[in-house]
Image (cartoon, rainbow, N blue to C red; front, side):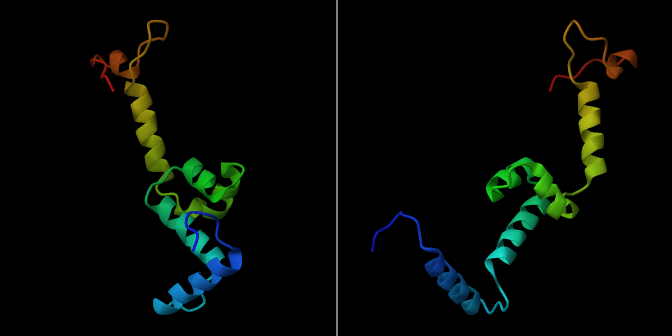
Length: 109
């Protein structure tokens, strides 16, 4: 048996069905496995761009269309990023950060 090469689709499918049968999972299919993989990745906090690349999507629009409901806490993430950007060190050409306006020292990230 040759190792390390591609596997034929029909062989992979038979192995998948056999594994699903041993695990006593009925109605399992490749598409469901793919959907579960993406859903679990996003629910665990994976970056949508990374999931899109792993799934072979041309861009994140497709990923967002089908899996956006698994991407956790959009508003919380936005608030965290906004806060980080507000506290981020500025270069000498930018105006003062909000932290400097409030009299606080800039924090290094």
